[in-house]
Image 1 (cartoon, rainbow, N blue to C red):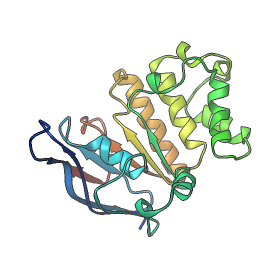
Image 2 (tube, rainbow, N blue to C red):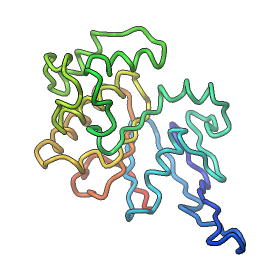
Image 3 (cartoon, rainbow, N blue to C red):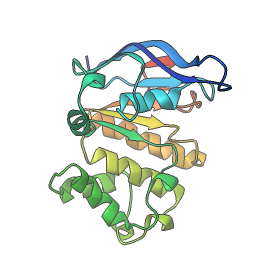
Length: 222
């Protein structure tokens, strides 16, 4: 089993007024699901249901109040900071709008090299240019700042940055929302092709269930 989520809950405590008792508001409660390798999940629900919060917990960017997240049999929520940081190479998260997520003042080349630097691994230009071919990106964008890229190019660059690390689990948060229909379908075709040639599991966070038809094996509604 690649991923097991057991009785996962997330809540926040706050006071409406200083003189009132503290209240606990749950974002979600007792969530559970499991995924085998190369098995994909659709995580769906209304806005504010906690989909992105759950994704950030799976990526160790937020803490849960209770429950377990087992990745390859280990509870990742109980790991110390250094071990969690190393594990992020295997669990990658693509934010909804890569146009906003990418540093607009850095060149595409620098953004790609930063990936290797952040995890202290040697650049693999053969793998990099293979991904450029798979995602149909021209190499002449390497010297452009990310602010000059289109939405579709930014989304593909974000995917390449994640896939360079050869993750076992890739979480994609509303990846098609900011794209036109042809570009969205192209992105999903790239992901389908990549999964057919590599060992990877996807979690899709999306309202667009019909768009993702045929790409996921399980569905969790928050």
